[in-house]
Amino acid sequence: MNALEIIDLQKVYPTGVKALNGVSLQVKEGDFFGLLGPNGAGKTTIIGITTGLVTLSSGVVKVFGHDISNDFEAARRLIGVVPQEFNFSIFEKVFDIVVDQAGYYGIPRSVARVRAEKYLKELGLWEKRDVASRTLSGGMKRRLMIARALVHEPRLLILDEPTAGVDVELRRGMWEFISKLNKSGVTIILTTHYLEEAEQLCKNLAIINKGLVIEHGTKKELLSKLESQTYVLDLDKSFRGVLEGYTVRVLESGMLLEVSLNSEQQLTSLLVAIRKEGYEVKSIRPASNRLEELFMQFVEVKK
Image (cartoon, rainbow, N blue to C red):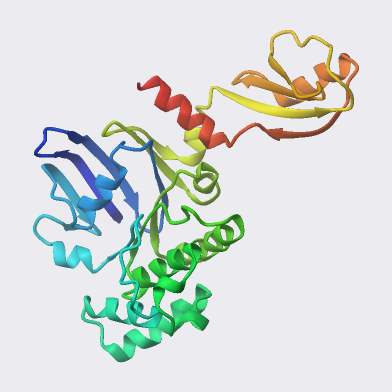
C-alpha cells in the first residue's frame, strides 16, 4: 500500500504564482522518503496540502488510500507533522504541550500522559517536562516538536527540516531516533537541506524544482546517474606532476589535490596514475556529499 499517493497535483495562488505544476509521486508504506529541492521548489506546499493547511487547485492526494478532498479527517489521524517553524506556546510546560496535542485526536488524557512520558524520555526531554518551553534550547525545541507529532502515534510522519539549527551531536542523535522509528513501521517523509542527512537516512528520493518532480527513484538509482565525483587527496609532497585525462585543481600548499572523475573513470586508476608520477596518497575523501553533487547536477540541468 502507498502511505502517500499524489497524482497531478497543482497549486496556483490567487496572485497567479504557480507553486506546483503537476506533481505526481508515491511513497510506499514503511518507506523513509526524502523530498529534496531548492528553496521555493514546492516542497512545503506539498506538505501543506497533504496536512490540510493549504488548499489544492487540482489533482489527487491520498493518505493510506484516504482522499484528502473527501475523507480528510481519516487521513489527518494517520499523519504527524513536524513543521519548520516552532508553533507551540512558549509559556506552556513541555509535558502539557505534548498531552494537549493528543486531545485534538480524541485520545483520553490518561493515555496521552503515558505516551507523552514515553516520547519525552526517548527524546531526552523528560527532565524538562515541567519547564516552560521558552527556556529550552533550539535543539530541545526541535525534539519537543517531534514528541508532539508522535503522541497520537501516526502511521506517517512528515519532517520538514527537522534538524535545522541543531548541532552535529544532537543531529546524529535525532537520526538514530527517527531511524529506529522507521524500523518500527512508521513511514517517514523528510525534507532537508543537509543532503548528507538524506543520503544517510533515506531509501527513496524525489527531487523537485520549480513545482515539478525532476527525478524520482531509489537512492541507488539516482546516485548511479551521477556524472562526476570529486575527491580531495592528501599527498606526501607538493604536486608538480601531470594527470592526463583528469580535471585537477591544486589546493593550499600543493599537498592537497582536488580531482574530478567522470562516470567512466575509476578511483583505483587515478591512484595508480598518481603513483606513476612519484607521489603517495596519505588520505582521500569526497570533496562533497554525493547526493549534493547529484542534486546540483539535476537542478542546473533543469534551470
